[in-house]
Image 1: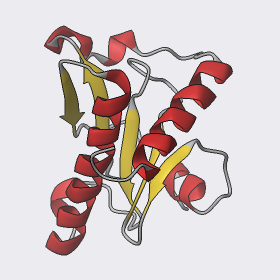
Image 2: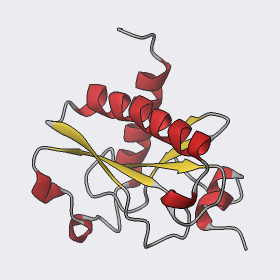
Image 3: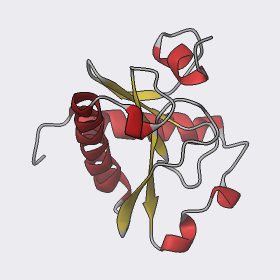
Length: 136
């Protein structure tokens, strides 16, 4: 059975997708730790990131850097944190979270009922940043 992420990637479930290429898709998580919390997911459904083929792993990290730069330009955090935990969905994914302190990287802080209008606004702002010419 396809993972929830594969179903989002395939358009079977709704998702606020902000980036997609031939290898990876990035979308907002449904329970953000902070506004801008984005998941970067390989199209290839592999549970543990260490089992990804090297070329897919490299491409996913490249996508994460691209999305991370957009998060940085939109939110201007102290850092854009990247975390691979992957226990909640058996499909490799990188959490990108704009943070001011390491203490903000806790799933205990996740908002299980974020405001849909805020989420739509964040997705639009990230899409705009991702479509802007480099250096703009």
